[in-house]
Length: 147
Ligand SMILES: CC(C)(COP(=O)(O)OP(=O)(O)OC[C@H]1O[C@@H](n2cnc3c(N)ncnc32)[C@H](O)[C@@H]1OP(=O)(O)O)[C@@H](O)C(=O)NCCC(=O)NCCS
Image 1 (cartoon, rainbow, N blue to C red):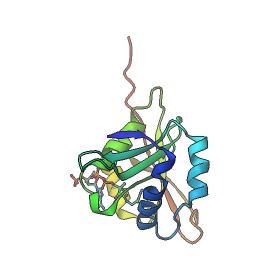
Image 2 (cartoon, rainbow, N blue to C red; image 1 turned 90 degrees about the vertical axis):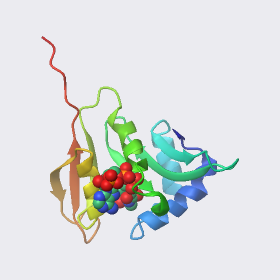
Image 3 (cartoon, rainbow, N blue to C red; image 1 turned 180 degrees about the vertical axis):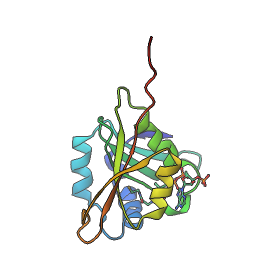
Image 4 (cartoon, protein in one colour; image 1 turned 30 degrees about the horizontal axis):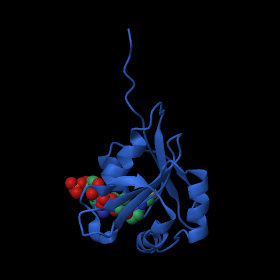
């Protein structure tokens, strides 16, 4: 199930974050700031089939303009389609012109993931991560022509 972030999710999100972005994890203040900036588009993927306690397996934060601020899935639950379901929420935002994200040049796994989802490399930002470039990857919805 995908639902909006709530404050009780923060501990689980911080654990996923630390394992997913060991070089530059967001801290709790960053997540709280992001929640106030993007209250409707900070989403969590929750496993509700494992007893009474929900387990947070992943999250995505994106802007209504289509900027993916962050996406991560718990390492134990990757390659099961959770990232796809989360990213599709952003890709289905009404009236989008494009969806884009910055990805570390060394992050081949994320690049393969975005490529599978139809994204293409649209540019490079040198040293975006201090000593590492960011690839800008981008996807645009097919606009149906009306006659
Ligand atoms: C990128 C990430 C969100 C993908 O989440 P996920 O739940 O594993 O993705 P999915 O299971 O939906 O993968 C869909 C497809 O993407 C491709 N893919 C995903 N991860 C991949 C990897 N590490 N290597 C190669 N291909 C990969 C595969 O083609 C996969 O389909 P398949 O399982 O049928 O082969 C997850 O690996 C992650 O949290 N990474 C660390 C954080 C990160 O790098 N975030 C992106 C920063 S911009």
